[in-house]
Length: 278
Ligand code: PDD
Picture 1 (cartoon, rainbow, N blue to C red):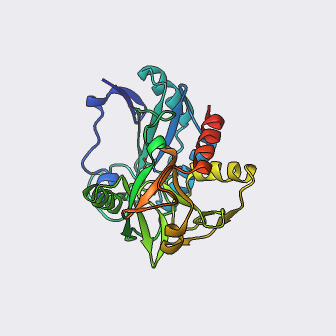
Picture 2 (cartoon, rainbow, N blue to C red; picture 1 turned 60 degrees about the vertical axis):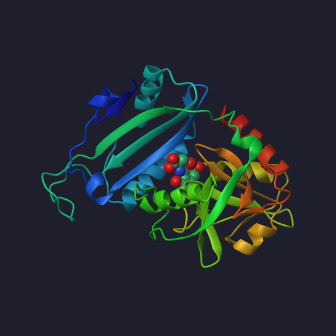
């Protein structure tokens, strides 16, 4: 059984309990982070920490937990070498349900757990992913990494029903991002096109790390939204996230992207990024 961390205590996972009045449960007033774990260490902490601070400010959650020693200890206690860490901070559990946060603040609810998973050797990185397009219907403050994930769950289920691996969300003919990953193309000119960081997408830490690596490879990078038409004309497409690192997309709505195989530039970016994470 895993050891998890909740509000200052390391506990067996079955003993970690949260009250039903928690504002994370009742109002989705919760923010979270996921970091990759490779070779027994969690990656990119300064960026995850900065985004957590921004997400908390947007969601009006106050907390000053010192996470790194907790996460190190969680990895150690669970003997984790590869996978991820999930941590969440919610608005806490007042005595009763009320839309407004309590005037006398209650402590934030904080928890973290590990998940063992392959990060470096993922079979999909050889095969490539199949994607379906789905209308963008998530809320307007997508830059905060909140737990308001119902729409992402519905879009992922629509993808599974269509026999695909995931969905990319489309707003007025333009691709925003994946349900839990940033979306990118190498367009017909060989330019890497990636949605800009605004409130329309989650500012991915993996994206932040990968774009400079692409520039190092001599690629031109344009940070702007791309259309569905550009996607279908693209040479390569890929996603980035803490869980998939860099993962090729080979098919969208049943149509091949490029030659329908994982693209060479995507493969090179994946190798370079994994090399940097180690
Ligand atoms: N999701 N966009 C969305 C909507 C996401 O949920 C994520 C991450 C990303 C990529 O961000 P990063 O590179 O920092 O992982 C983009 C995590 C992995 C999850 O929900 O499990």
